[in-house]
Amino acid sequence: MASDQQLPLPTPAPSPPLKAESRPSISAEINKETRKHHTELNRLIIDRLPLGLPPQAATPHELGQGIATFARIFFGFESVWQEIEDGTHRLSKYDPKRAHEYDVVSSLAFLRPVGLARTERLRKDLATISQRTGSYVTTKSAGKGIESRIREQVTERPWLLVAYAWVMYMAIFSGGRWIRQQLAQAGPGFWTGTEQDSSEEKSSETKKLEVPGFTFLSFDSEQDGEEMKAEFKSRLAETEVLLTDEERQEVIAAAQGLFDDCIGLVHELDMVVAKKKIASIVLPAVVLTLLLALMSLLYWADKHGMLRV
Image 1 (cartoon, rainbow, N blue to C red):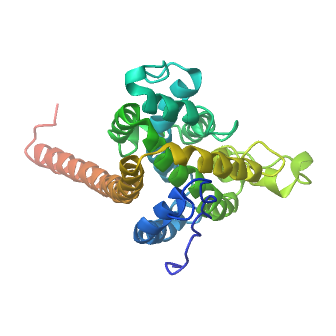
Image 2 (spheres, helix red, strand yellow):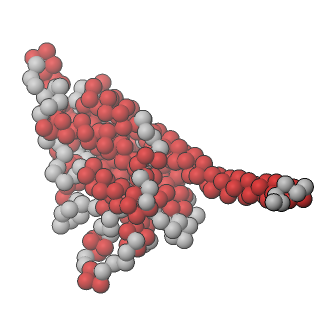
Image 3 (tube, rainbow, N blue to C red):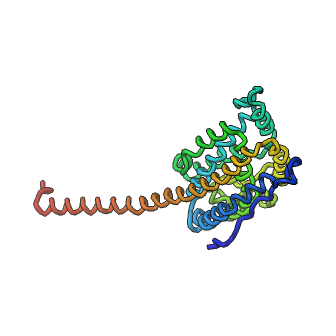
């Protein structure tokens, strides 16, 4: 097992135009304060990913549970972000008593480039996996409370979107590229139950990596999202200058907490898989025991003439 392999940290955004001489960019601070968390999460993912792929797995059911679990994080913060972009968030309307919060929310409304959101692709991927496996993976995934908790936190303190966006989006652009390669090697048949059409064999390498089931790791753009990443970093440098010192610390703490949540979700998934394996062993054993008991009962009844007409 390649547990010593490391997924790359995202490259920090440029330092903000203001106060650049006195502090690093907030993305650089997040990277620094979450480095140990990042290393631990990498190890957990690298060790477990092969267990959900052929030849260890015949279908993407286990991977689907993992994707569904982490999708809850995206669903939580992206739903609030959509409200901000739509102008329906409680702080989207100007209030002189909360002018600072209004300025931050107004900036957040323009922080995320079009096409960066993952919710729609994740929902389609989960539907594909559920159809492929005949089991609705979302209902059996771990971390059922994290989506509502994240939504509540970000609704109350919308600047925490910076933490969730930096950690989750940049993860797709760094370690997510490596994970996508591993998932693609399983082949379209593993993910959809059908082999790749011969007319698609000459498609671009990027399109070959965009298989239903994990399209959330790809982007609908000529550069596979690289231009979105650059634009996001540029906008983040403008947004972060609005944050107070206290808000910056809250963002960094939220990023650390998010990594802790992700590590906890991996361990929770371990428990879900372990219980399933135990059930797959126990259930046949119980059935066999009942059959043996029934056979013994019939033998006893026959021996004592209870089955004779």
